Length: 472
Image 1 (tube, rainbow, N blue to C red):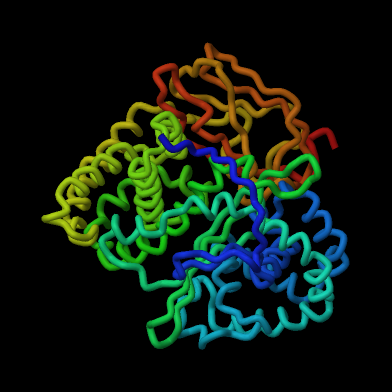
Image 2: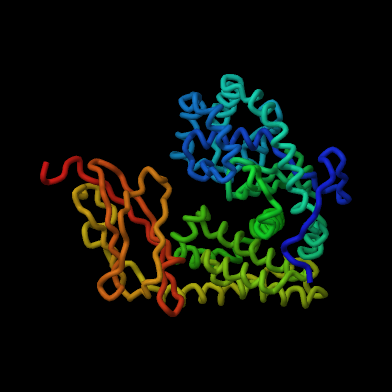
């Protein structure tokens, strides 16, 4: 039985490595990806402000901090707020630029993420080229060449494991795309898929952009230690290149049930940057495909079971049923030579998947109210010392989970203590607030549940304190 963890002694260099399957490039660090992630780090995007690889992110801060007020950074801040240019939209722009930061194709005719508007693209590219010179980016990348080279070598144990032939076997279509693995060293535990399509409709490039979230004693990124996480991530991102176009072509089959699922799980999904029903169903299908990949390659059932439970904790409640549906598909390949042929069956199965989510929603505890103010209040007394969250059903007092919202750490209240009361139907959060300040936090349901396992519905709390306390 193949284990998720393997030990490989790397004696090859990047230049000397030859991959048998030529549809995939060897892993590498890409200056375009690094540059765009640095820009949106400086712009304040929380998803680009991880410090897991501190040795490298400290170098970024030291070199680029003087340029936080550059016109490009201010424009990126504006795009993030007004157009939601964040997460995969940032990486989409990166792969649509050439090495000189010029558009590879006309953007309006390209596969660039649709959150980018034509006028904004032109301004962004102009400012980006200016920033590249002003911030001495070329010198930064040159100074870190050895680090990039070492990171690429260290990724080989993960790269060596992947079986690209499985994709054509499972989906029933031979890939014509070029697969490219990019190591994004400054984005922490985030990972993205992106694609680039030429005007002619040929030459599609599929990118798996993999973060860096584990380091060794020297502070250098270490992929092998966390190969259990990195390898499924790589399998996951390449699945997107098959799943997303497949559901794009057939989305009307899934719209009703997809919309039903998303309305119930919207908060949970949005906190994971899945902002519509189509994205959620893309993710569900990709995650089930990863499980199928592991099954087909004889991975330990304990590892597969752990992955399934992890996906359920992320609110993909129907993941086991979706994997079972793949088993039906695999058992009848004479009738369904491709997964696309099986789409009507999969759409029918989503009737029962949606019902699973509906029944779950009926049984889970609900946040009823906040004692001290109404959620969304813009005139909260800054002198209050507690925020009391009340639920309709008692919780087993096993923990709590309070996370930053989109407004980030700056909007998170100063929490002093948290405890249960009212027969475990209330959680009291002792806080210290500042006048005239916006606050936001998320009560995450995956860590707040009844004894029967039904999780609280994830709830976002927003409020603003008054300019003065009543005593003033």
